Amino acid sequence: MSPQSGQQVVMDADAHVMEPIELWNDYLEDRFRERGPRFAPTERGLNAFIVDDQLIGAAAFELGRAASTLARERPPTRHATIDGRLADMDSEGITAAVLFPSIGLYLGEVRDPVLLAALCRAYNNWLADECAQGQDRLYGAALLPLADIDAAVTELERVIDRHGANVVMVRPNPANGRPLHHPAYDRLWERAAAADVAIAVHEGWSAGVPTLGSDRFDNPAIEHALSHPFEQMAACAGLILTGVLERHPALRVGFLESGGGWVPYLLHRLDEHLEMWPSFMPKVTLRPSEYFARQCFVSIDPQEPHIAPIVAAVGDECIVWATDYPHPDAVFPGAVDVLRDGMKGLSAASQERILGCNAQRYFGIKIPGA
Image (cartoon, rainbow, N blue to C red):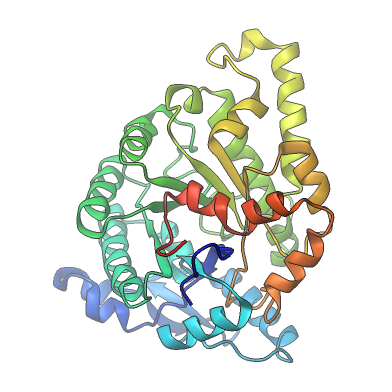
């Protein structure tokens, strides 16, 4: 469903693929093929993924299975084929979507950085082939192997040159002991900004990487509830207050899959702290809220109850929206209708920006026909 001239573009800023296990046989380089992810039962009899002898994302997949039982009354999604996904998008009134991984959310747990880089290459090649079938409606967020900065920069260059990448995904969690604001990443941010590639900070929650909240709880549902907003808040504060956005003013950064309610609170708090203790943040020349307005985006969920207050606090130009389709906690069907209902108090111009204009600007994507 390409938009007609003058028709509203509705762009899903964060949908997901459900990677088939076969992709690792088809796309992983020969010397790594025997080490690709494979299904294996856990002690509790649940299917998880094994890479080498390492269990990956087990608790997260267990949460997904539990959520699936709660969502079993909804109509099944048709995500397994490109035609089925596009049909579901048509039924929702969605023009285009940016696709993020499911298994790939947890590849950062892989201990071997050389293998991790190979897994990212395989996933990115597969994803590009999938999106090429999407009639200019599907756009993939490439994965970067952050455990090795050189490998991450190399993969960024590769997906730009080979696939024309518009967006790359990173987790907000520290990788190999480095938070996102670590100076070692400056080469990555510089190249992304120069190539007009957007950075998508997307949490996944897993026990295999440092995760805020995991030091307090051993309950996966509680950890999941806390990790998404807290990791995003930490990443956002780090990128702003340590001067990353000051050094890279053309870099565009989005914070996805954590809702948007945390943003007004955090920006107010960061503005106050800069005003009170500027000597502790000498690399910051603007108010944190000004950096956010200049370079950052946040995705809201369709069912968020406080969309209008978020817009009132941070404006309507840095907000995108996302379905999380086809994950079991996604709103389906009816995501766009739920979102429109939650935006009733906003102006038509604000609704148009949130529905699709902001996402096109953030990702650097111009939808054909729009």
